[in-house]
Amino acid sequence: NALLSRREGLVLVGYRGTGKSTVGRLLAERSGRPFVDADYEIEARAGRSIRAIFEESGEPAFRDWEERVLREVAEARPGAVLATGGGAILREANRRVLRSFGRVVWLRAEPHILVRRLEADARTRSTRPALTSGGVLDEIADVLAARTPLYEEVAHASVETEGKPAHEIADWILEDW
Ligand code: S3P
Image 1 (spheres, rainbow, N blue to C red):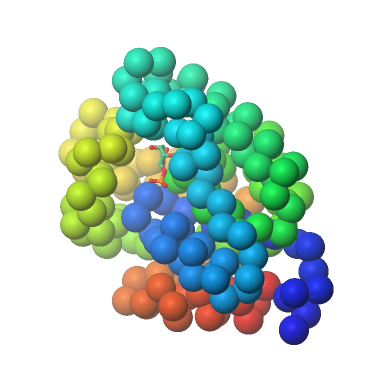
Image 2 (cartoon, helix red, strand yellow):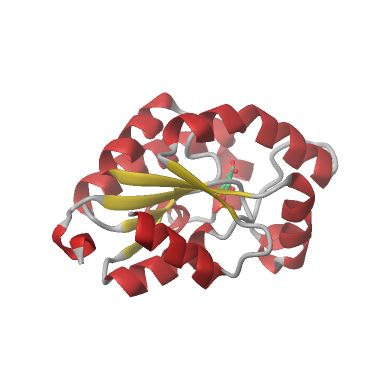
């Protein structure tokens, strides 16, 4: 298996609710690579939840944490499977770090699907900060439209996730890695 002889890592990018953490864990299990969840690393280093960082210090401070942690993780965990937060692609410095870390795969889904998934996910209400003041479908459509060119720019490949179970998505990514 060519996979095991390579040091190239794998990065999952995409909007909230596209399954980055679930698919990432499966990929790590199947490839024998460690799994790193960037949001979790940020919370561990900051000693508070992402929601608390947003509320107490604002989004720019969160983005500074994110940039620092992505750089550190890329340095410390070469070859890992890395799940990023939905906004990790916003800064040019991050896009550069992610691409040099390894293969970048964009998990895609349409806004109406994301609304359903995010509403079904209890974490959305408890830990995920709102990104705009509007309704959830508007927020997703707006934020996604602004981010789409950046996901396109950073990703080597993309997968449409609608209707596909996580293990199928992981299989596809593994074959392609
Ligand atoms: C964000 C997505 C979140 C988290 C933060 C900001 C975003 O990550 O990093 O709340 O800007 O899309 P998930 O995509 O893992 O929910």
